[in-house]
Length: 170
Image (cartoon, rainbow, N blue to C red; front, top):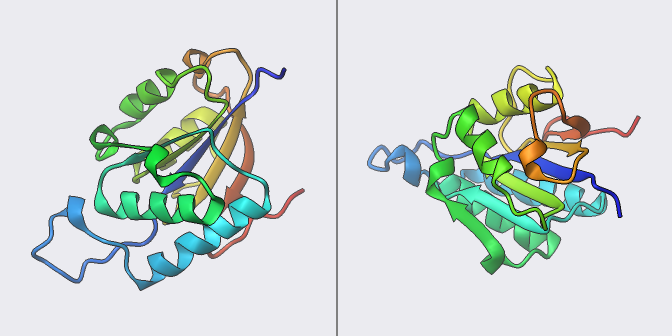
């Protein structure tokens, strides 16, 4: 059995700023986000991507994105781990979360926020982007027997897909 592990970072879909009474944490997806998230789920399913462990920020826009991705790929919604610590998490906190993943998890999806997801993607897999757009999918593979082995530069980019610029296999 391969020791490869796959981590997919997904920035939450586009959120609304229409209601000034809502806190940043409570902002919902807007119309574009509601359109992009199912499309990205469709693309992920078409590529055969499916997690055995799924974590997401508990901020409303990240929760809504994660639920749409689960619905679109057949992942059980009840199995998503929503974590408040992923909201406003810096790169080191995100890296700590990854290193503490259960070793039985071979493929993990993480839905979170910028700028930290962009910083984490570039830290792990080398500089690929200045900004992960909303609902971007950044999928990378790691060799090794444990998530504890994930370090700077050890990720290998597999897919970088965005709603406006679909990923093309090379």
